[in-house]
Length: 163
Length: 289
Image 1 (cartoon, rainbow over the protein chains, first blue to last red):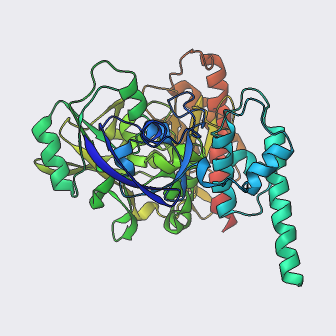
Image 2 (cartoon, chains in turn cyan, green):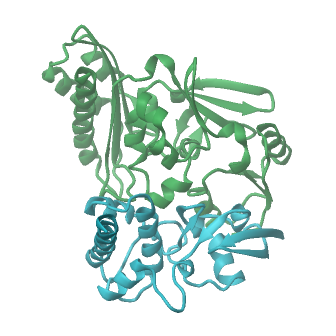
Image 3 (tube, chains in turn green, blue):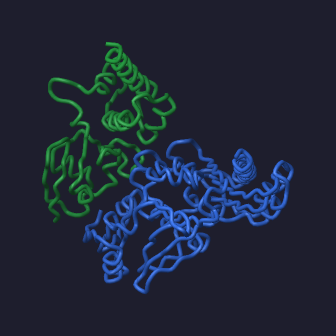
């Protein structure tokens, strides 16, 4: 067993895990954070996407021991009981998902994109989501939601600048 | 996944020591995007997993008198964001962006890509076109070899079981040499190459003084199309007919296969188109400046 300490959504968490445990298993089974989903388990579908030290990765392809000492952000870190992250609100408003299984990974990938590039083109949005598969809604409304968040952000920045 | 002992050495010597001591029941973990998939689906996993993520000698990109050194543990994302690579070997970036998806590129490493050594590996052709050298370290010390000798066959490299790939060197003479990369897949995202191709050219007084043409996914390993190179070498930069002739020759030098992704006949078409385009683009880069 390995003792690991990982900062998850700003909170230092500890666990004892066998070395073959993936970060995804530790998130879900050790820490009860079931927002990140187990889809393909081979790094193709992106349902398990989380941020590790700010970079999006497939939590199914990272060992929990590799995350020791690092900072992880999961979908649970984006919202609270009182509020939704703008991406989550836009996904909800535009019905950007149906079953919802892919949505946490989609939203984390979108956040990784917007953290680096607050004004992406549609092509950049689609390229940033190439590692996140949706098997029911499709991608149009996902791209629409992200585009809307960028537009709202640009408007808000514009208001601040002109004020 | 079957259980294993997980070790994180903090130096290359420590990594070599632990992998030699536990050979052959050892696997080296780089980015894990291939290895973890393999470990989940094998009945005979390693007894010891050596995580190379904390070995400083395997990291970093730097310019030395010998050329541009790229550590084996450098990720595809790091390559895409490297100013040194953008300045000296931008075709490597053109190749890196076609690998997997963002998540794969954030984790996957160039060394891992080379060691896994599938015939379609996207890091391969540009490195062959730029005459890259690789350094491997073992218990008896380090040795360096041309990348074409490192690739032995599908999933087979020149690494001995007790050796570790340390870095990749683009020789100084090849830095800034115009080069180009093209990949053909069934779609843009997360696709394996049906054919990938790269070319580099040196132009002197309006003539092609030197060229390297490299093709992937069309033979057991990345190959150089030597006869195609011979056709264009010495020709004038604007000699489009020579490029077409070279593209047809490249088709005869490859051994593409039929599989579930594409027929050999379709791959032959792609080889001709890809060879022509990479030559054309590399030459455009040579004459633009």
